[in-house]
Amino acid sequence: MIDEKTEFIAFDTETTGLSASDGFIVEIAALKFNLEGIEIDSFSELVKPPIKMPEIAYRIHKISDEMVADKPTIEEVLPRFIDYFTGEKNVLIAQNSVFDIGFVNYEAKRYQLRLPKNCVLDQIDLTRRAFPKLPGYALEKTCKRFDLIDIQTHRAMADAVLVKKLFLHCMKNWETVEQRLAILNSLPHFTFGGPMIVTIDRGLVEVINVAIEAGKNLEIVYNGGSHKGRSRPITPTFIYNRDGMAYLAAKCLMSNAGKQFRIDRIVECRPAK
Image 1 (spheres, rainbow, N blue to C red):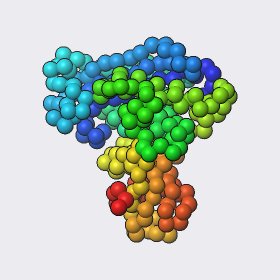
Image 2 (spheres, rainbow, N blue to C red):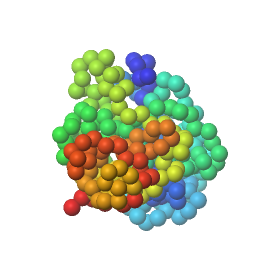
Image 3 (cartoon, rainbow, N blue to C red):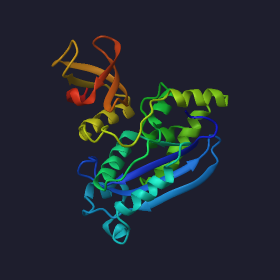
Image 4 (spheres, rainbow, N blue to C red):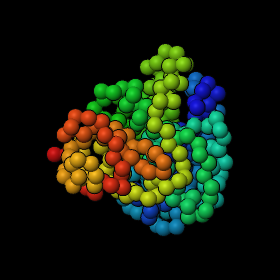
């Protein structure tokens, strides 16, 4: 339960690629603050991955092999990050949190590290609730829309700062603390650990999240329901975890009704024409 004593931790990871199953974390950063926006402390570490930095990843975050050559490995850094966010009053927030949860889960699994069940919110869900008519929900574009940044470097701490700024900007839509807490408690809540993400197709999740951020429709083929095996257009809204399974909440445009799809049963997924 999120209340007035909750401390929020905006966090972000930079990685060697988009797939947690064969990619690695190269930077973790986090910023802890309270509901009033007062900063408490921060966490930021570069990580030396076990592979050379792919060129496509370097072009995004500009973290080179030389920058991480003498840095600790994730086996050393991840326990420190876990210690940083552990606590029953700590709630984490990330933009497209499923991506970061997936990488943390995989790295923890590699080194048999136990992950606490802290609540994790997705900033996209909060932004969508505060501003339901935006044309898209990408972090940098949304922050520029609200004059929260001029230029942005794609590094973990820079993105964590943006998540905090956008979180606080969203909170201004509700006047009282009680209203703000009610909204936060009504959002989908994720956790680290468990079978979510480590058992589903990361490429599929990425396609879904890109569509959610951009406010775009998808066409899926689902192995279940009355339209089993047939292509159907949907408007995706968010991904959530229920009983250890990952689900996609979406509006089915064929039936004009809200639906829930088990992600492991989506056999095809592409942007709608």
